[in-house]
Length: 68
Length: 68
DNA sequence: TCTAGATGTAAAAAATATTTGACAAATAGT
DNA sequence: ACTATTTGTCAAATATTTTTTACATCTAGA
Image (cartoon, rainbow over all chains, first blue to last red; front, side, top):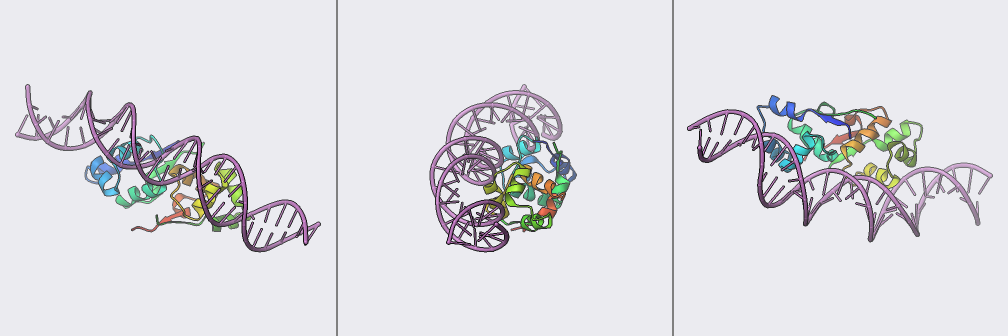
């Protein structure tokens, strides 16, 4: 599943936002956030939207699909 | 789950692309595509990317999140 | 009218995402 | 050296998405 993300980068750009803090803002578990940040699996579109919303970014700014 | 999409519109703009044809291009079942088009549930980000790619659009052009 | 193609719905099984709980390692501060 | 915080991992349970199969409806064309 080749989906990259800039979550780690965005967390630090937004005042060292911790994984747990972000997880709470997004309404998800810390483990879920870790897995997504590490691209272990593909999140739900709904969750992807909520993550992007926290940073005030669009989906494409946070997640990049590498085709093939 | 308030996620709108323009799949139906995009299908017809792309030469009356049928649900089954799109499903095959995307590598998914027709029922899955129907459910997503009808916004019955939130697809995987991976799948959302593949759908957008078929139309040569970005994610945000195909799916819109209505916050709250 | 009959047939074929496109769309819609439904229910159970399979696959995948998410939660819960617990533990380990690294870092920073006291 | 100790404690607290952050990050990472793992495994089992739960929730959600996706598949499979089957049937119903509608429209267009022969």
